[in-house]
Image (cartoon, rainbow, N blue to C red; front, side, top):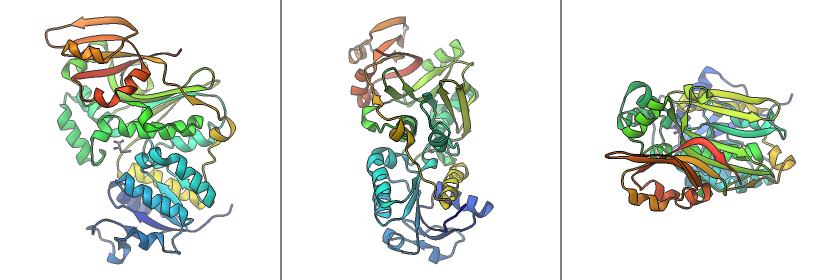
Length: 399
Ligand code: HSE
């Protein structure tokens, strides 16, 4: 099998960039060399000064560099770097889920036009090879749903709360110290990171590119002792879950919400910064992928895997969009949720189509019932500002 030599220009030397560098030392890939590393300011590492540069064009305009590995934090800067790199005819490996989810259509088209490869296994679920499997192994029409814990930081926080009685703030600080959290942890705890990953997985599952703004994402930042006790009493854990599901008539639905998870589910025992993805399909029923979803070395290993695949000229073929296209995003279904609130006035924001359980206490109240998904999407920004907590029970109704 033929191989190509990869001369790499690396952007970013933070948690994942350094992780990749270390992983490469452990597993020196043949025909792979990091030529230059572009950073915003000098890094205190035992690497020669001439390895670093501060102007992206020094890498982008270097004709000896045929591959860009983009591992920076800022999604807008990442977009400009990746776009320019593709326009210069260079292969790109990226881990930037926000940048990819927001610009997938344009970048995929550009990579195709320029006849280069754009790979991003590390952008979703860290070390778990979920994208490549959706692309290669699940390259048929059997897939029914992809459901999982896609964010390591929020799972780390929930694990510490549920299993170690730690408080939310303490656990978040730890997730930040360990390098799991984004520089703005709102991304993690409010479900944006999971949303971007879900958008990418949806493309590789069903060939549909959905705009992040049009998908419900609600996270765990409003969770209270009351919600935790409610879940404990029922024998549930609360996990932040992203789900894309195939409905009848070539429709798909997707959302990110905290979820009550019962002991019999695979994701119940996914703890700490681990991610877990359940893939459900006709014929094979359920399969479960599990692994570290955050951290420099696990994520660096996924970047390395893209690099070595690139050495063999690997590209995503976007098989679902090509062969099984025609799926449409459907927002008109209903999901069953637990809505915990303090002030009954808040209920005016919500429209329950049915209520199965209701509780009124001295401080908090809750209702469990079905709500139309599109109504929740319409107020998704507002949801975070209300004194409530929302969690899915796992039941959906699709009209
Ligand atoms: N902040 C992300 C997480 C990093 O916690 O999952 C990996 O994408």
